[in-house]
Structures are given as C-alpha cells and as structure tokens.
Image (tube, rainbow, N blue to C red; front, side, top):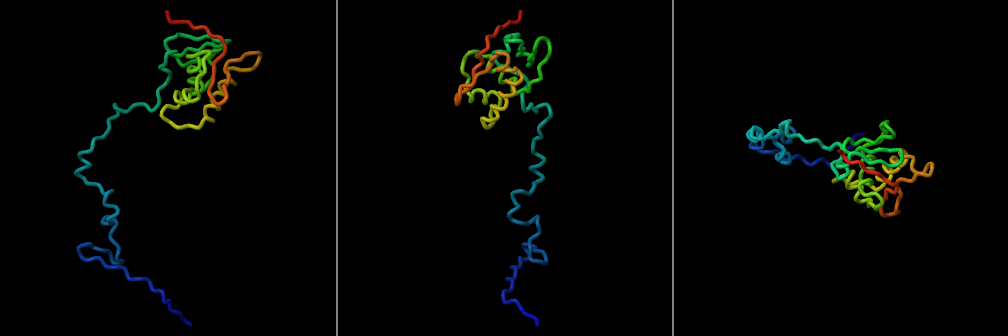
Length: 177
C-alpha cells in the first residue's frame, strides 16, 4: 500500500533570467546577496597596501625599561639581580626564573618595603591584557619557591591579603660606575 504525503514541499520560486538561477532554483554562490559584502573587487585589491616586513613590531618587549634598569645590580640575601640584563644570579650562577616572575621581582624591588597592589603588578606583567588574579598568585608562588622564601629564616615577599605584595628583605643597590 502506497501512501502519499499530504504535506508537500512548497515549490521554490524561480528566478527570472536577470537573476540566472540554477536548475534547482538556487542562485549560484557567487551571486548570493548575503555574500555580496565579501566579494573581492580586483580594483580595490590592487590599491590595498601591504604591510612591509620592516614595519612589523614585536608583540612583547624583552626585559624591563623601568627605573630599576638604571641600577646596575640589586643585592638581597644570596641573590643578585641585574635588571638591565633581566637576569637573577645566586652567587655567580644564573637562577632559572620565568620572565613574568622576574618582572614581578623587579616591580617589587623598585619599591622595597612598600605595598605594591595586585593591580599594579598585573598591569606591569600583563599590560593591556585581562588575566585572573590567580595568574599573579601562580607567578608569585614560583618566585617564592625559587628564592626559597620562608626557608632558613629568610623572608622576601609578604602578602597583604586582598591588597598586594611587599618585598621585605633588606636590599643593597650598586650603581653603574
């Protein structure tokens, strides 16, 4: 037994000869009105300027160009920070530390004994970027672990809950001669 569907599909409107529809009644892709804004105009393509490689700027700057860079080195505990070289040494050995944690350290050492707000630190390490405060916590934790903060009676960084951080170890600065 054969049944017929009483719900027949409506016939597609046929486009007149000026619209040049395909046999199925659809417009060719190139003539679809919704895609018109995306069509390339060869006259416009020829006029577009292409950015030359000599104008490309790096996305991130290496190192710090802040006030601490004027100091040749900052000494605290067994560590020596060379801000201009973006380098932390323990004795004469380089200390492996990520660039964000090192930037945080420089920011704290620029204002020893002062509260540096979380917002200031985040703006310094992640300029023009939204990051969760947890990112700051992770990098401060890595910095504390590297400095062995809290071990052997050494205290470098303290947290003022909800406000920021403070570098509390006494420092000495040596200026370039």
